[in-house]
Image: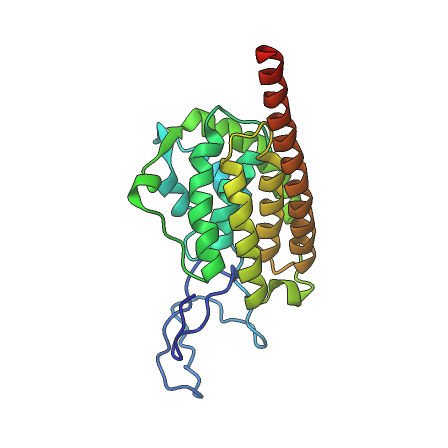
Length: 250
């Protein structure tokens, strides 16, 4: 984790698509509002938070872009400018919740390992070129978005800020550590072993995006349950292999 007295810890905060403009006066003073032309002046009172484009809508826009033949992972990194790391992890986790093209979990699982590791340490999102340059056909991406975007749009309407203790800075580091473990499991060649861990990661990232601690808690509980289920599947596979070897060599 990066430390320093002059650096503020990085937290998930997606209140706007644009960064805060630089101050033009000293702290404690107020910049005068100079109207330009006939533009209406803002209403007095507390400034409103700027609305951002929903993740489900941005995914649809990328999938419907006719100028692209293939979608690179680097395109997904640039999809949410000015927004937090949780949105990127959600982009890579959500497609694994539903059945997809062969090899999809391997393509999206490795970036999740890098991103969840950065969330665990409180760092900004970054992927090495060898991963960021991977791509898949836009038709496959569009089919995947067609399956997950409607559900994602409905879930986004249910989120609201609550249970702040579960979305605090320390809680984000714990969530990042747990998601790092789940993302490694997604990479393993376990039959249907990527769906529940990916769903758990998706719920936790949705909760972090909207500061909804309830969804973070539900995702964490589901993730613990998925560990037991995946462990049971792996145990059954290993036991079956030993049984076949015993029958062959008897």
